[in-house]
Length: 389
Ligand SMILES: Cc1cc2nc3c(=O)[nH]c(=O)nc-3n(C[C@H](O)[C@H](O)[C@H](O)COP(=O)(O)OP(=O)(O)OC[C@H]3O[C@@H](n4cnc5c(N)ncnc54)[C@H](O)[C@@H]3O)c2cc1C
Image 1 (cartoon, helix red, strand yellow):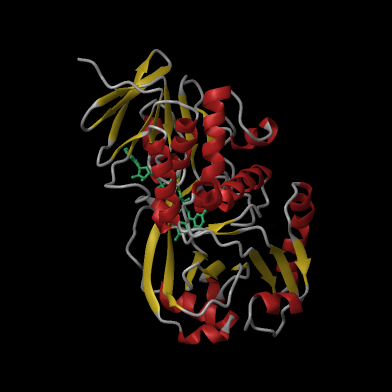
Image 2: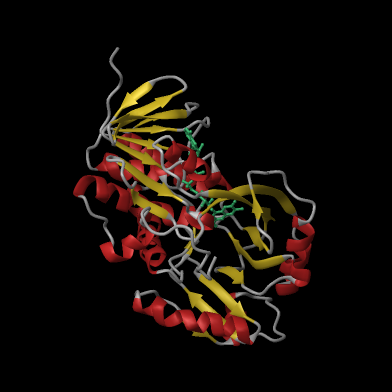
């Protein structure tokens, strides 16, 4: 029996898989994308609140974020498709010395990597976030080039563009095995068929380590639950996405962030103080009262918001908080695009462009020394380091 043959197979039609497929197909490769869900972007991609920034503290994330921003911000003009891009920047307000110190300490690295970011005084913060609490406000950092997109529109846009370049998408099809010959991958088996290709890209998100295990690899990507919510639309008043790094009351939360999307809806999220490992996606009783208290404390004018919906999704976490991107050690033809933590939407296009460059040219499209920080061969048993979640 002959099996369908491709140049590359991408496992996962998500935040990483779709741009990866697009960049590969655009350069003429015959690409197959497999996803076990019924359509594109239905995994953790659609759980994202849409924040897109290059403002990180890790050089590799900065570089990938810059590439993603370039791709997102020019998408409408280059393709004619609206992905809900809004260039409103990111604002990190500081209400205490500790947060001010943390933010200022990051500025030299961020500027060295060419990010447009600076410290701004309290008055500027109040102008950027009308109604923000004045008491104790010391100022903050602001990066005007960052922004927001609609995760579902972006995923659909990458999928459609990949398909226009010849990529084939198969949904409701779960990858159950990797086909190997000696130490090289030769294709994948699914619950329906077998497909052959000399290159396989594991972009299976929170389940990426299961795929890697099919090649005998132990890749530590562990799902962690996070919640978010969205309001009914209100008159546009807020440009930046706001990240409050202070811990919440009674140790419930660490950072908390919110913004207003291109449709006027307020979207919000927080990082629980104690992580919730696992795949529980049932909304918690605590989320809405906790996040509402933080939102209204920071911007009292939001006290009358109507909340439309809350949801809970998964961050694919790694031990050091950095993605795992590059050739899988010891398995020829297998590449990993995993462990995006809470930043897969904003890193996805950059990761996709670099994975495609590795496949086509044998090198990443960012500085190889910086890219090496994401190497699947690095010591992955260290603690989390990145401070800007
Ligand atoms: C509440 C919340 C808010 C967030 N906000 C943001 C944000 O503002 N900005 C940001 O950048 N990130 C945000 N994130 C994180 C972001 O959603 C993830 O990092 C990102 O979606 C991960 O992308 P991925 O491509 O790795 O995984 P996914 O998008 O989940 O894609 C993986 C795909 O692989 C498929 N798959 C898995 N196993 C198999 C298999 N065996 N066979 C076939 N298919 C398979 C899945 O069905 C899925 O579609 C947020 C996450 C949450 C939970």
